[in-house]
Structure formats: structure tokens, C-alpha cells
Image (tube, rainbow, N blue to C red):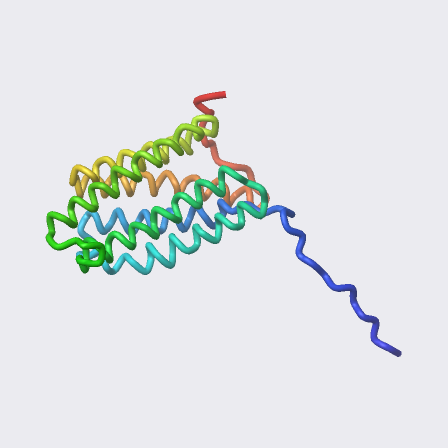
Amino acid sequence: MAAVAEKPQGILLGAGGDPQVLGIPVFVLGSIGLGLALLGFPATFASMLPIIVMGTGLFLLICTVWSIVLGMSFVAAVFGIFSAFWLSLAGLLLGAVLHGDWFGVKTAADGAAAAQAFYVTWAILIFLAFIPTLRLPLIYPLIFILIVLALVLAAIGAGAITGIVVLAFAAVGAYLFISVAFVSVGGKPLALGPPLLK
């Protein structure tokens, strides 16, 4: 008896899935690493670079593409913004803080000024991204405003306090991840709070 050829199976793009199931935990991963580094553990930011680049920046970029394929514009924008943040943070740490002279940084004061400009610039962009989140459940604007606060604190050099705020938004993000993960396996979401704007 002759074998029957099976009809080729394709992948239906836009068929479903939620990029937040991957994007939120890898964001939390980088945030925990950064928060711990700001609190002095580990002693150097260099050991955080694999998490920042490969664990967070790269996988948020993957989630950006995933969101685009699904037509989730704002989710894609958020993941793209944070991918850019983490990858550019790695560039800042490598080029201006840890090794210096990559971007014309000659002194520790130049490195501190570069870091300050970095944090202020990102605080402005994240604040702009915060505004549309006011139409989402409360947990989303809470995460965004904590990130803005952490960036402002980093810009003024409040290292340990910044680390605590970073770990706070990582904890809120972890709660959000559990909620999204519950939904992805057929459960009910956790309470995320009402939107501040209708």
C-alpha cells in the first residue's frame, strides 16, 4: 500500500498568544539584576551585562516582533522601548562607566555626566509612555511611574534608594507576570486595579 502524502502544515500568523507571558518576566529579570547591583550585590555592574543584554534586551526585542506580528501596536511599542533601554544601558555601562573612552569619556566625572544624561532622557520617554497606560488597569501605570521615579533617582545619584525602587517595580512586574501566566494556562487573572482614565 502506497504511503499517503500529508498536506503541508503552515503557521497561521496572528493566531494568538500573548507576548507579555515572555516579555514581562524577562523585564523583571533585568530589573532584579539592576536593583541588586544598585544595592551593591554583585559588586560590579559588569556581571549584570549578560542578563541585561542577552536575558532582557534581546528577549524584549523578540517580544516586540511577536507583538507586531499579532498587531498589538502599544504592546510592541512598550517592549521595543524597553528593549532599547536595556540594550542602551549595556552600551552606557560598557562604553562610559566600566571601560570609559568608548564614547570620548575621559574621566569619572565625564562618565557620571553621561549616565545622568542617559537617565534623564529615558525618564522623559518613559513618562510619555506612562500617559497612555492610564487607560489600562492600574498595575501598568504603577509600574511605569515607579520606573520614572527610579530613573530620576538614578540621575541625581541616589544609588541605594534607586535600587529599592527598581526592586519595587520588579515585584509589581512579577505580580503582573503571574496574572498573565494564569490567563495563558486557562485560569483567571489576578486583580490588576481599575484604569485611571476611561
